[in-house]
Image (cartoon, one colour):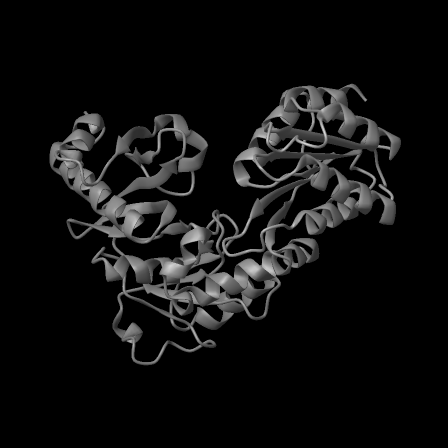
Length: 380
């Protein structure tokens, strides 16, 4: 889940990370009890879990008198009368930096990305970022980051940024974050201050955290779902709709990403991505098939691709399930199916027998090798 800036900064505050004074805005008046009338300047920020707010006019420096008009202008841009706003103390910035941490799934570590300049254009020049793997509990972690910074920053500033990177990596681990981006990380009065933050928390770890503390982010995430995505969640799995030409039915994120990559290799794109939900039902096959069939009714979707792996669950049971679904709901587009079945799963029905039964029901092709299956879709 992507967190709003306000909820992300509340997390930073719990861990002692410096950030500007701020308060959520209620209406057009200065927040009561926050002392905002004594701040040297005000910054109004729309609370949406998206980047590029400054370019869209959703972050503005204002005076108290300008606050109502600025809020009204932002509401018009957003088209959402219930949008939330964070009002912060304006900072006198001496220098802007960029610091982001992300989970590197391939290396199974945290990757730090540090830029000597921050701001709205940093994403357009990612080649300038200094990248380094970071284990916050390893001896000499800060020293290793400092060495990677080289001449990019003055030594005294580089040392502080290195220590801040390690500190934020510990926050990341404690809060189960997959992404923590501070842009800009500013030098203000000689110290490092997180002027903005972007956080993404692993949904699988949500049970370990106070849901009330991220309720606004959860509401925004739910409102952003399409009707089909929302229905999928009520039925026990996650679905992301994509602008693709193949309705892809898989179980598990790893298998789904593999199939998406194979489709891309053949010049095709998936029209959806499916994943399991923590605590969801053991089998959501029928619900996934229904979602794929609904997507396949769209003109831009040309085929349905079903692929699964079976370790112990009988192949015959899964084939019967698919055949039963096809009998009750004819496919709106050609169906391609694949099963990678362990020997224990193929007892009672081998792949050749499964292929014959599915072909008789109108399934175009059945392959055990996912590459061959995707190539069959591409060839058609």
